[in-house]
Image (cartoon, one colour):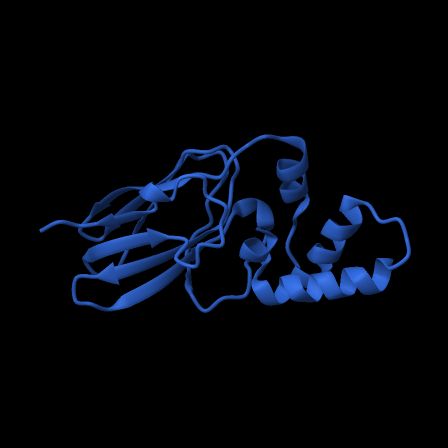
Length: 157
């Protein structure tokens, strides 16, 4: 799950650095998170708290797609940044990255980065440049979403 948030390459670097720094020592979960923060340049204390001190679940859904307008919904209580794949009516594809405001940054990616999503808001709406045919949350399927059945939406004509 951490690889989804900070990127797979940063996760590999984090694991290597953590092993180097803490081999034969008695590290805590905070030591691991601080190592990941240094590698990724993201704030991850919220992640440690959510995964170790709550039973919150990740569940996001495509709520509505109308022409160029896409609305997403956070159903679960565990906030996450969102990778989103959009297929337009003309057949072209665009990937979007919706940062989580608590991260105070973005993972490395080639997607179009749009406005961040505040964890206090249960919905997120944005407008694309062209009419939309299909939307998919987490096309890599790396996010631990408990219900993937609502992660896609296809506009019926």
